[in-house]
Image (tube, rainbow, N blue to C red; front, side, top):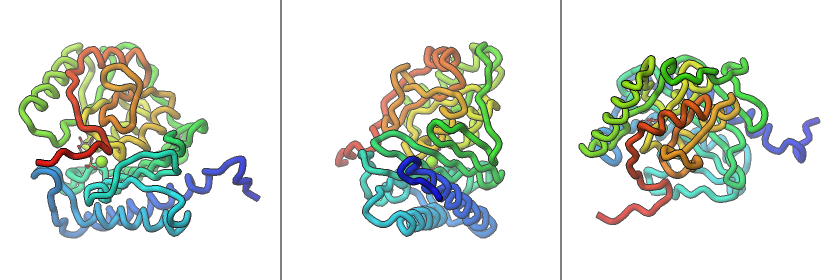
Length: 287
Ligand SMILES: O=P(O)(O)O[C@H]1[C@H](O)[C@@H](O)[C@H](O)[C@H](O)[C@@H]1O
Ligand SMILES: [Mg+2]
């Protein structure tokens, strides 16, 4: 018999994997029909009926299993509709139903479901299902990271010249921000590194750090739902997380560097032109 007092979250972890797989199947099926595209904060901030429907399926399944009221939820599309994005000490699910919505719309083949679970603001586990590749990444705090049930490990590269670094451009197209992003990319490319990459989904990028395919991923402007699950997976695969200024990682800060080790992370941080992004949960100023 399961002893839930010693191992309170195993059932939730297993269920998260099940729900992520179901969500991924829905996304794959939806990609076979016409995709109707809508926008949120600006014309490049895309959303589809699938994002909304899959989030409802995920949150609905979790509420049914764990009971309404006991667990809290932060979901990308719920927040877009005005739900609060506040991380408390209560058991909280942090969900991105479709990470890589732009990829999904264009049928660019990297789309992930990201589900994380935090208690007392500490991430307990994370599940990222890269559904078009059928890769199920998962990790539970203190218990290792896996891809399709095989253990994964970050790369042991310490020489930045032998690294591949990932980043993304985000959705903020104000010229000063884009300029900073390109300046940073140019500086990193010219260190030089073996290559710069971006899959279009933060969750997938983090899993690529966790498998050792690349050495690091950084971005300013991501949200907690993009990176919460990946954060556990990277750490359990032996990697590290930092703020883009070298300070401690803060899930709600919308800034992150994840890497295979501190040597690589600190070398990249030297080149990042930092800019601010309004914290997740901070009030949106009236126009
Ligand atoms: O909005 P979704 O869930 O598709 O996620 C985001 C990506 O994860 C970012 O890395 C990326 O830079 C984009 O901001 C993208 O919007
Ligand atoms: Mg996302």
